[in-house]
Image 1 (cartoon, rainbow, N blue to C red):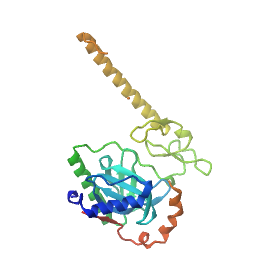
Image 2 (image 1 turned 120 degrees about the horizontal axis):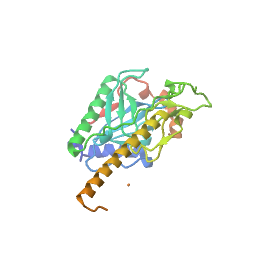
Image 3 (image 1 turned 90 degrees about the vertical axis):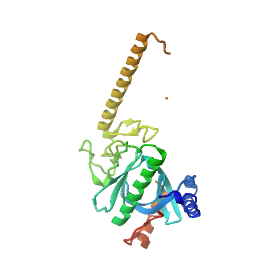
Length: 271
């Protein structure tokens, strides 16, 4: 689907344009064999409210960022390898239409397109790129994914103790394991989840207990396995000896630019 575009001037120019829009805040995107398959403005369901994000689908990665100046300046670049992505179709809900979920090992989130046809195009192209990448590289698609964060507005009480009410003095927190909105008392612990971060992350009490229990079981299994190997070695007589402030300033153009008000597709694909 995309091999014939890999070494074309048009593809090179498109990728250069994306790099220039991110400027020095973004990583270089031009590598041998990489093709920009499509791009478009989607609504990403964030913690506090849905926000516009510019997405770029390549044949091996998905890139998105915050829009400062439409078609000219993007910031907060995120790069996700396609082998780490799974797509889940979602029905319309909570006033959000044409939804689907992008599930990855580090972060899972919901995005929305303007029209059903635009959503269908995104799902079709992402799934096709993932399938072709897996076939080409021989690697397996990731099956471990982070839970999506439940938006703050969905609850005004802690979703674990169901007693603490949130207000200006009592902050909302998110468990990085289950994505629930929880209070400080219900999320005092942190746990290392290497797939998401190199540092321990905040988790709720319930998830912490489950993670510790699972860790103990894994450790016990490893000890039993080592013991079995050791016994076998001894019996055989053998020896055995590691968000940006700019975004807030420029949100006002969302309510003025016709591009964000008209009900028309905001994505385009090059295949």
